[in-house]
Image 1 (cartoon, rainbow, N blue to C red):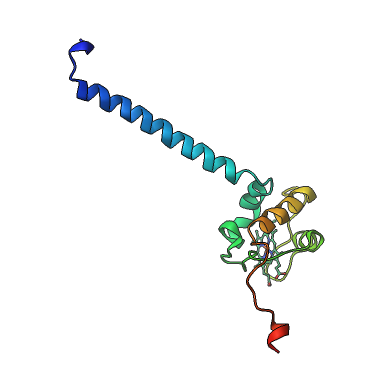
Image 2: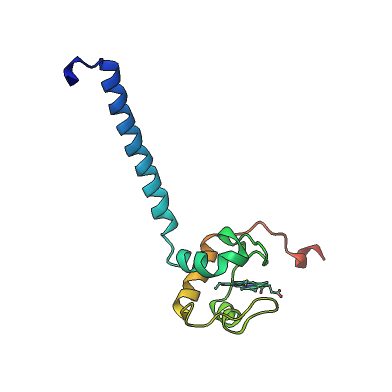
Length: 121
Ligand code: HEC
């Protein structure tokens, strides 16, 4: 008979449900923010294996921080660059490459605190 269960037990079931809801909400929120940039998915699918999570670099050099010209990146992606193999339009559309450039720019602070070598010389 549920009514004869100790109230402590009923409270803990409710608490666990509340906890599960909070955990789900937190997960949904973080998943949404990762999807804010349309370039996130293509980056993770194609570039991340070499350039690392969030463009931080792995077996290939980091792409963040950096401001890349979309046409330059498109040329690098289509023709290859040094050790980087060319990637065809079957794997990645031009629009996806441009979205990736915006995604990488979004990971770079507006004004990177980099001392220019020009002023040091
Ligand atoms: C198979 C591994 C690999 C993949 C996949 C890959 N890259 Fe690269 N990428 C490299 C390597 C290695 C270099 C450095 C080449 C060198 O300097 O000889 C490089 C260099 C670059 C550069 C030139 C950076 C500079 O200094 O000018 C850009 C831009 C770049 N990659 C963008 C991308 C993008 C965007 C993607 C996904 C569409 C991607 N790469 C996928 C391996 C990869």
